[in-house]
Length: 365
View (cartoon, rainbow, N blue to C red):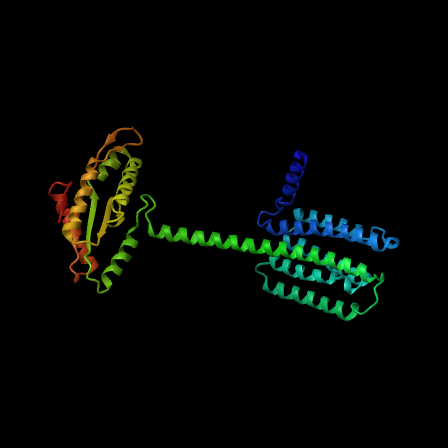
């Protein structure tokens, strides 16, 4: 059992081996390697059926093709994707022609042109002209097989039972290859779409939030205020601007790492406190902006309670381990339903500076 696991592990490592060129993805080569392994199994089973139904003609006719496929497997590690694909296409077309010519149209070898067409779209993403040319070549070849070979007597005619067995083998192998190629192609696309959706969502989130505190940024708050004041809503709207007292002194004496820690701690406190009360954003630097769907009196009560919590909060200097406290000053203003956003913000800002001038650590309304 351990031997089998080790063998499967080595086989998987061989199939998933990287390509030689760093600017190319190995996804296509992995797909092609699996398809080639399926074809090796197919040729072995074909030889077995030949031995069963036509023992006098069974002389390892498929051995050269197995050796060619092994060589093709090796090329997936050595050459560029386009070269590997063209070699694979050439030898596949040759053996399709030989099998139709030697064993007849009813064996069904011509159907392997279909997965070849699907694989071509997987191999060349951006070359539309090349896809059209390649598809045209396969179509012309398919028409040639039908017009010139389908009615001809094969070199080695098979009876109905042999034809049925070979047809079943071809159908099973064909559907297996098509299933794997389509699954590989669709799963890759789905994965790419998921990644794209994830990155778009992350970019959208980053565009709306402040990286340090995790709060909304100024742009997001302005969008909210513009939307909130653009309609005919009669709901209350109150805003507040808060500024950390002597924040520059913290950066100068304790370092910017400590200043960042203060901003992060405040961000966590504000996010928790404002969860059901309103919106909060980092307005810029050491300033924070609050929006409440309440009148000014209620907003003032909320902000002053928040100011008290900030004053009681213990912050540890990450460099020295020293515990210290901070305070904040706030200006609160109620929207009068007639002012512009700029005027509303200026009035709140004026009250903030009035609080600074009168001693800090207070809420002015």
